[in-house]
Length: 327
Image (tube, rainbow, N blue to C red; front, side):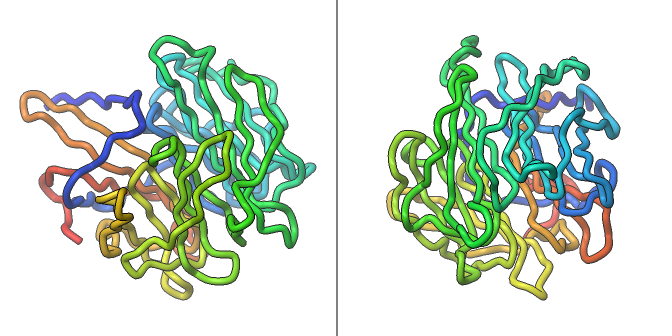
């Protein structure tokens, strides 16, 4: 049966009910620190750093395979997100040259249209997290981009910078209580426009907070469900995924099912995944199938365990499809 992968323009879709997971599938090339999954506007996009080199690579429906992103070198995993209506693919990374965060973009279907990298921070202590949003259809000049990162060295403060229509502001902190020893992750969504997760600076707890680009964020609350991590968690709207506490390399997830009372589902093991020695990433996917109606869900990507440089993906979706596993 013919299928079509549909990109979502509004990043507030909630996948209701239980998720059923596909068996893990190998994707992309090889990586050292792990891959990044495209956001709501580019459901198949993937970005990663090479296993031994400092290059960043891209793969997507518009450019399958493995392609070097020109002018971008890093020692960490990059991040990637997309804008729907003006078909922009945005990649961010911490520079191997000066340690600052840079972003660049190109148009979907135009591999040679990468822009000049833009420096959006001073020296950073982690890879960046990027969130791209368009508040209205067919108005790319109002596109908003938000980037978050950890401070350098012993500075565990979480910083944020944002742009609207291509004009970047001055970086600021999320608040005095927003601190981590890993990379933070942000997404458009939540009760105040943006939501974020991060690992505690002195513990393995995962924290969740909401906020905006202009005001201090809410005091973070621990995610319930019994989860903890030794790496950076990742978020897609109301869905959070993470790697277990070392030496546990399993992948786990939870969903926020009642925002007013901060009611998180008990953590579940991602049954379609083998495991990872680094942080996973997640984005939303939606597939329409005719005449059956199709499904909606979350795509999780990760690097293999220990010295395995391969990248893998599994899709958690609802309703259940043939071959899916049940957590």
